[in-house]
Length: 167
Image (cartoon, rainbow, N blue to C red; front, side):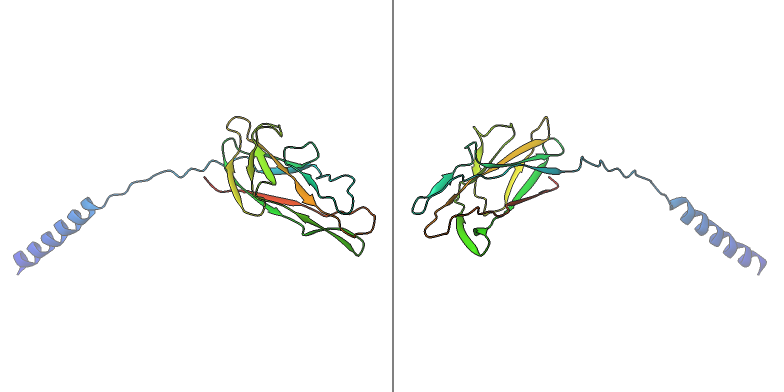
C-alpha cells in the first residue's frame, strides 16, 4: 500500500511540476504620442461693403474682402472643416438673405488667398494641415442681394469648427 501511495504522490508531483514548467508570461510596452492641440483663430470678417437694392454683391473666397480663419496643429494631420452659416444678415428686425455657393469657401496651406482649393462651405470637408508648419488657412465668401431692405448695417456670425480625424 505504501508503494501505491508513494507512486501516486510521485505522479501527482510530476504533473504539478509539468504544469508549472508549461506556464509562461511575456510583457509588452504601451505607448502614446500626444499631438499638439488644434487651435483656430478668426482673422478677417466677410465684408460685403456698400450694397444697393436690386444689385447682388458677391465676395469670392479669393477676394481681399473674404472672411478668414487660421488653424494650427500637428504637421500633416488630417482635420475636418465644418461651417455654421447664417441664412440672413440682420439689422434689428430686418433680414438680408445671404447665400453660399458650392465654391464659396477655400483653404490653403500657405497664408495666401490665391491658389486655394475651393470647397462647399455647406458640406463637411476633410483636408490636411501643412506638412511642415501644421497650419491651414481657410477663406469664405458669399452673396447678398438686397431688394427692399431698409438702409442699415446688417451682420451675422459665420462659425468654423474643426477637429482632428485621427488620421
